[in-house]
Length: 164
Image (cartoon, rainbow, N blue to C red):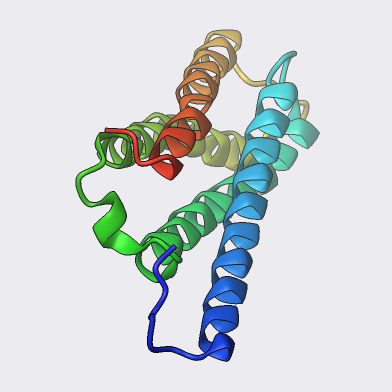
């Protein structure tokens, strides 16, 4: 923990509260992110009709919001947290996490576009159904996203211990 040796006990407590708050916000964002990714996977497990297309669209908005919150709270922990950037600057897991998060974002773009397209079509075509090939392709992308995202907590554990 980075503590100013000349600081007061109040300064140390303040830094600890900030670090704990940032950790809580980051963990909450991660859980919400995984929750909405799971919801999307659950919604595309079977044929998608008009009602489900709207649900997917709404879940995807929350998914991307949670992803943004993960990124922002992670950056806040990195730069404002107790250990600070200097502790993690030479950490391989940090850079691998950033790379994997970018891969997750890239993989998530196609489902996002698909969900928006489906929602628009479903709003105009009575008794609309998503093409099965698109549904299966979207499910594969979401599963790949989930598998890559599952590596992030492992990398976080390595980072927290200062492992290279």
